[in-house]
Image (tube, rainbow, N blue to C red):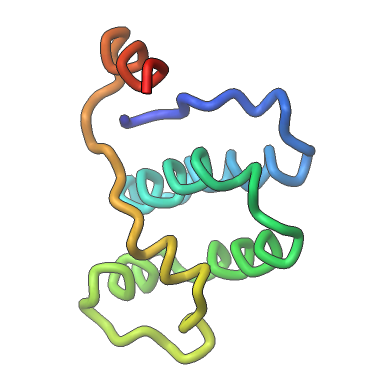
Length: 107
């Protein structure tokens, strides 16, 4: 998917802001990784995980891309279970269509 498919109506204002920021990173690849990760995980993240997720999002996109792809070694402060979950997330790069949304809702 290449855009927001989750409604944010049931989310707190903080979670809405985070979800928005995930889809508006600056590098499209990071939009897809963070945006789709957040769509799936944002509602279940604890407050401590949200704090950590916001700190991760505060890192430079070029660095994040290099760390996630393994082009650069991961700094010690990011060697956490949450970062591992984000880095292991594999976004769906297919375009959003009526059929793809319908198929996703049937899962």
